Length: 181
Image (cartoon, rainbow, N blue to C red):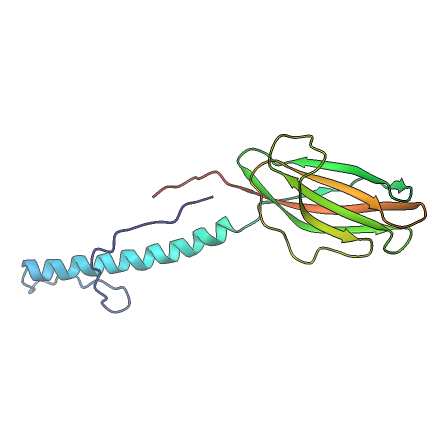
């Protein structure tokens, strides 16, 4: 993540949409004229910083890498729940669930649950992030998580055996600060 550019206000004075009046050969070089040109520069610096901060915001909100998680197809007996995948969030990255879908041989027979655990890797449960029933898809991405792991499980919620599969796409982005101006 890149920090915003922070400049002091310096009492900037606008002159022709960020232009700066330069001294000409016949201009008087005194404190008032020097101050005015300096304040024009300060105003232009503020405009440049505002535009640069827009770019920084766009870069910081960009997902840099998409990572698929595709668990194998499993046969689940009625009431059975199985952890089918785990994803540890790497150091200096944060991750979101960008997309998720679940399918089964019987409509609405299987529930996909994706949980987040902020602690160590290898946990059985965590805080619920996504819950979908077979035939449905995640329509909007989740928030980003900076530590821990995602735990993906499938559960047969029907009264008959069902084959189930899921497809999950994680979005990863760096959270390392590369600029501190």
